[in-house]
Amino acid sequence: ESRRQPLVIVMEHLDQNDDLSMQLLAELLSQIREEQLLVLCTQRQRPGEEPVSPVSGQLLRLQPLAPQAFNEFMDGLLGDDPSLRPIKPFLRTHALGNPFFAEEITRALADAGVLTGRRGRQRLAGPLPDIQLPETLQALLAARIDRVPAEDKRILQCAAVAGSQVTLDLLRAITELPQAKLRQSLQRLVQAELLVESRLYPEPEYRFANRLTHEVAYNELLRSQ
Image 1 (tube, one colour):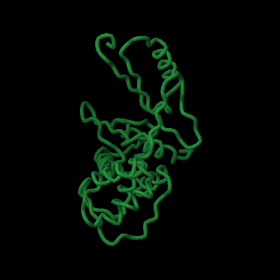
Image 2: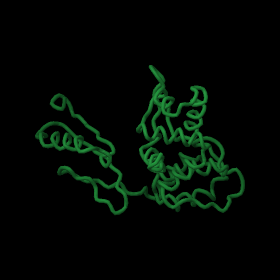
Image 3: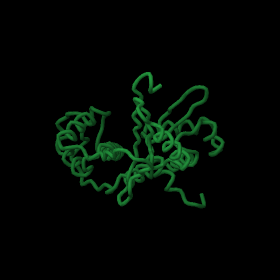
Image 4: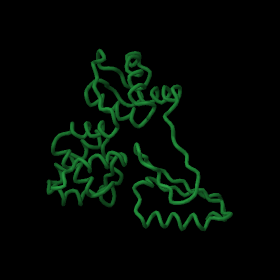
């Protein structure tokens, strides 16, 4: 295909791939000569970790958003209601220019009743309270998961064991819940933006809103569970 037209191959979450996938990537790149081919790989790098570098290539580190870009992102995320003026500097300071962290903070504030409305049209529900938020994105996601009802949390953890996506039939087999009750819990998890309904036919399928949410939900499980 790359001999007919320019081609881009994307491999996401390089840090989560198994050895066989990495060998396949290395084999692919070793055969690239003059083809019109760009291979783009993404990975999360935790503090203190070295990036995965199976082959030669160019490493591009994504930096936090610059102040002006972050302000524009916040305007699109929250809106321009005058009541938001005191909270935007707080988000800018706490999220450190990370848009994903900022999104999760706004979800946590909405869960706590501090923010009301929908994306792009939110407002402050009252005087800005003394807000105490976790210092890391993982801790913030864990706190959001802990706030959902106990039965919903158990279903989320069952889904995490199954993988990044899971069918309704498999979840019903794991949880042994009636389908109606299971669907109600899944709907609440979708509304909380922890899960996404990714397929309706031939059978409903759900996936985690993002890889990090899946990771946090799974890591909260005890080994005995």
